[in-house]
Image (tube, rainbow, N blue to C red; front, side, top):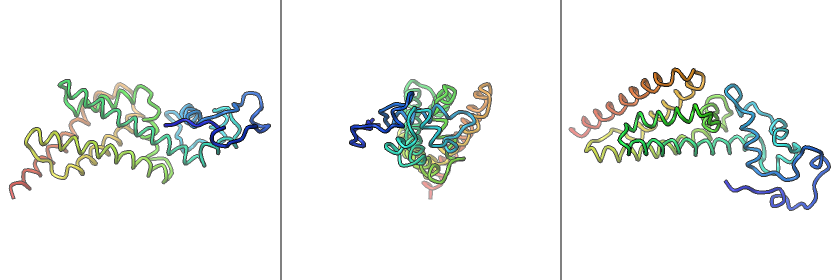
Length: 225
């Protein structure tokens, strides 16, 4: 993300009386508002419940200054979701590294996912929560990010199948099923104690292998026709 200052956005050389009040910043960039919103979110606080005034107060600016960076709270939330999508795709990269090191790509990806979850990765928390409790605009933004993940996962499935000389039936649909499953179970993990993580990873690993074996079996049947 490219940071922009108020001076470059507005072209104003002066500042309003409200902005010059003690404790308020004369210059603000988008990242300041994003960080402020993230500080206000938590295990029981969704971005969709934040008000513009709360975020402005946390960022140390007058509410009117918010509009120099975002049109409204929806636009801020979508920016957060996009950053969260990048965080999720980094998990995929971590999983690939584990697979290269000889670990199961399924279990490696799930362990990487849980590690980020327990590292209090608030961006990941945003992605998991806003897809179920946010507005329609938030849900569409989450869905776009998950589609990026699905495309990358489909490419992985096709590559793995080719390397093993097998065929997965409808790899795109398999990638979608796996992504939505992990996403849903991740939301459940947020509300579960860390002691449940190992059992959850075992359960998810088994579910994903069932999906992959089913897709493989269907691919064999289709190839035999």
